Image 1: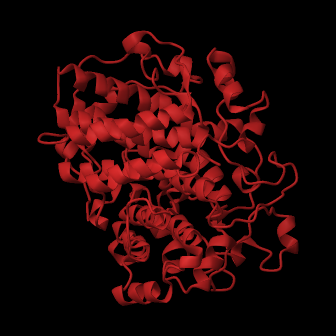
Image 2: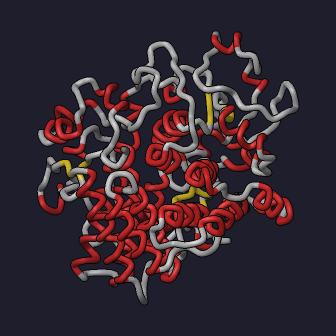
Length: 503
C-alpha cells in the first residue's frame, strides 16, 4: 500500500511558484504572463498532480453532479444535481475543462518544455511528465470531444493566444504515440518523493504508462478496431499493472485547504465541515450489488436511516415525484454513501489494476492478443474488491468472502462483454469520469434513462459535457471544431452529441 504523505512546505512553495487564476475561456487561461522562470521541476510535478486530482469546484460539478448521476452510481432529489435529471447548467458542465486548462495544462506544458530543454531534470522525469500529460488530456477529450491539444498551454511559451481545436481522433493517435515514447524514456532518475503517485518508482511508472495505453486502445474498440488491436498488443507486450500495489492514486491529507484535500471529500465529508446531504446511492447500483450478494455493498454505502436496510434511490426524482415512489418516499429511506470512502484525506484513483484486468479480459473476448478472458475477469473482480483497503485498512474484505463471490459469479461467456462492463462500472465507483466514458463506449451496464420534465436530451442519458458558452466568442477556432462535431449554437444540445469514439 502506498501512502505518500505530501509535504506541506513543498506544496506551498509550488503554489507560490505557479501563479493561477480562475479565468473564463482558453484565450486568457492559455496565457501565463506571470509565469515564474526556472521553476523546480519537482515542485511543478507535485503541483500538477494535485491539481489533476482537482478541488471541490470541478469534482462537485463535473464529477459528482453530472458524471456520477448520469452513470447511475448515485442519485439525488435536489434540483441543482442537474446530471440526475439531464438538465443543463453551463458552469457545472464546463467546470472540469475550465479548471484543467487554467491549473493543469499550462503548468504541465511549462514543465515539459523545461525538461525537453535540458536546463533541469532528466529523461526519466520527462517520460513521467509526458505520461501525466496524457492523463490530463485523455480525461478532457473523453468528456468534451475535440479540444485544444497540440497548441494548448503555449500562450506564454509561443504566444499562441487562441489555440486550435484538434480532432479527437488525432488527439488519440498522438496520445498513444506519446505513451509509447514516454515509457521508453523512463530509466534512472525521476521525481522521487515529489511524485505523489509512485514516489518516483520507475518500474511502476512504466506499467502505468502501458496500462493507460491499453485503456486508450480499448477506447477505440468501436471507432477503429484495427488500430485498437495493434495498440492493445503493444501495451500488453510492454508490461501492464499486475497487482493492487500498482494502482495509480494520490493519497490526500486533511489540508492545507485548496491544495491537498480530496475534492470529492471536500463535497461529501461531513466530519470536516462539508457534507452535501443530497446524494444517495442509486437504485441501479444497489440492486445489482444486492442481487449478487456483493460484499462491496457495505463499503459503498450505509443502511438507510429509516429502515436499517440497504436501499438505492431511483434516479430522476425530486421532492414531489418521490411521493409516488413505491420503494420509499423520503431520502432517509435510501442509503447514503459510506463516509469512510469520501473523506478529505481519501485517495483519488486515476487507474487501477482491476481496470487493467477487465480491459485484458475484454481484449481476450475480442481475440486481441490477450488470452484467458475468464482468468482476467476473475482477477479483475478480486482486485476491485481489494482496492478499497487503499482507503482504510478497516475496509479490507475477508479473503474468503471475496473468493466465494468470485467463484459464484464467473464470467458468462455468452454475455461476456456485459459482465465485464458491469464489473468495470462497479470498479470505477468514485472515478466517475472514467465510469462515464467506459459506459459510453461499451453500453454496459444497461442503464434505463430518466425523462424528467425540462431535460435537454429528450429523455436520453447525456453522452458528453458541454464546454463554456463563452469559449465560442473568445476563441475564433471554436466554431470550426463545433461544426466538425455537429454541435449547434445551443450549448445544452451538445450533451446529446457523441464524441468521436462513441459509436
